[in-house]
Amino acid sequence: MKKAFLAVTVLFSLAIVPGVIGDLLQPEMVVDVMEVLGLPGYVLTLVGLWKIGGIIAMWIPKMPRVTEWAYAGFFFFDLTGAAWAHGASVDYAGIAPPLGVLALGAASYFLRRRAEADTAAA
Image (cartoon, rainbow, N blue to C red; front, side, top):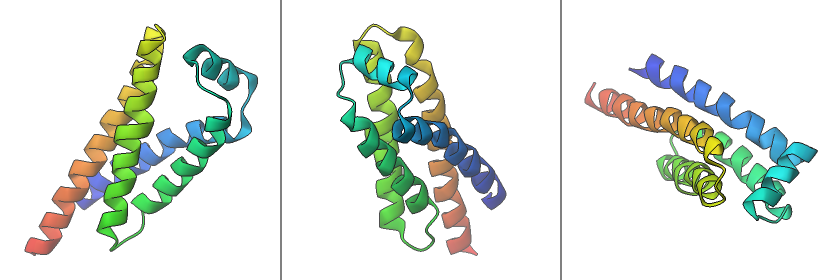
């Protein structure tokens, strides 16, 4: 179970990285999307930094509360927020990518819980 968790969590982390790069470097395409969504550009830097913190927090061993907050941040703020913002601005094609990454994150979360339970039982 631990190998599955590690594999999915690596994929999830790698799926977040392009968003981090876009948020921090703010290429014209990303800024244009933010304008379409009606969000201020300065949010990008903050969200990019939060994503870096979240990725790091997910990999910190023996700090379950920090890990839970990292997953919650990705699920409830970053990924569902992105999907909602795209839907609310009638950019329906933009809904699927964050939900796909969300599915990877959910798999990582539940596999982590399972691996921790297996370790505790052993």
